[in-house]
Length: 248
Image (tube, rainbow, N blue to C red; front, side, top):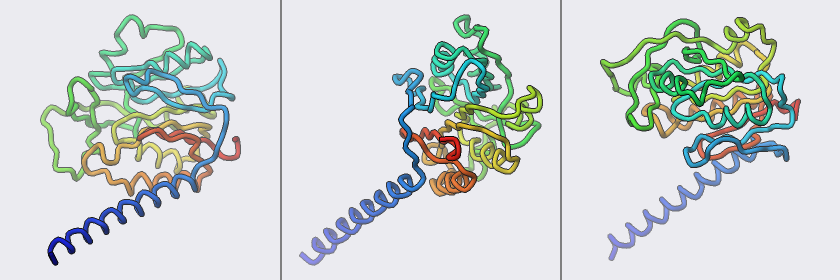
């Protein structure tokens, strides 16, 4: 009886801890959130490749960078169909290269560069996907400290947002989409350090998905983005959309 009572007490405490953890999580996102009515969902939801973004300030002249092609660019097609802007797509992985060779992705609005977006310029090592069907290659930086090593890693060229803006003569970016398997943290840190002007950031965070990436890293990154003036306008699963508060 005493054992059963102790076990039930432990279960109750665990449930309470989970409840309090959930409340802290909800309060955290409520604090960072800023409501806006002009949100639109674009892309294929069946493939989890849809993003909810603020669209009222996008037009044919908007500057859009999209890092991470993978196997699906329905989001980029939807953007081009709706607004007609040029979109710079970045992905040096074998999966991304295969996708961008397909005839249906050859359109005048797309400019493709087989380079990685990173927090530094130079080179980056990529590890093969854990799930070949899904196809996402992972940066060596993301796996640092995870104990994972892979002889099939490939080395690719990488750029920062700042270096790309210099190459193309852009003074700002209207929309930056980042789905780069854990390398997003370095990219966002570099953006904030450089002070480049990006109106809207749509990013997938990979804590709990890739080994060695704790939720605390995402929380700290979001807090830093908040201090730099960004507010979360939408969150769906791991996908976060942030906008400069001064422009909302």
